[in-house]
Length: 205
Image 1 (cartoon, helix red, strand yellow):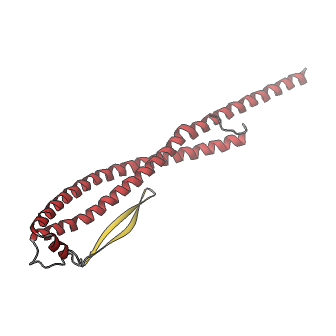
Image 2 (cartoon, helix red, strand yellow):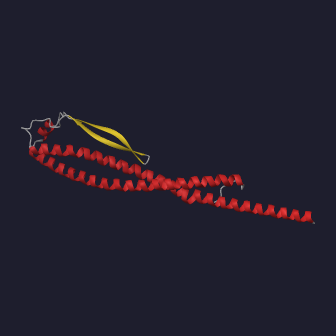
Image 3 (cartoon, one colour):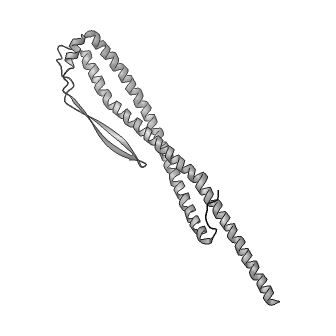
């Protein structure tokens, strides 16, 4: 499609400059899109590994805790875990990946999560709590990865649309308009030359 401009030399120069900038922008966006896709694939693979590890540890943790509930009465178990002394915090930072701010979570635990008498409880309870304690940082890592994957997917889609708009709409429109104006200016130049030659012939006659 031709752009709505006056077919003159000034507009031709402007369009040529716009075309150079558009092609440069297209290359930069294309490189950014490719880098984002590469990083996205890397994070998806990492996410899959962490997810499998979390699921495996959760299954193991639930299995161990199931044994605990069969070895200890419900009332004793509730009394044992009623007053936790450990406090958990999450620190949030951000990492810039190709102009995308991706959250980074850090798990911090203060105090001891063993707040009960080791004499009155079973070793399975210790094992179960240790297992769940180890899962928390992994779950945060999984949440971090999934958020990063989601943000990168959105950015890839936005960048892809911009690349396509430049490649299939703006750059072809600029090239076609430049070609049209060039042809028009050539026609005008030929008409002027023909008119001058006719004038010269008339003057000679």
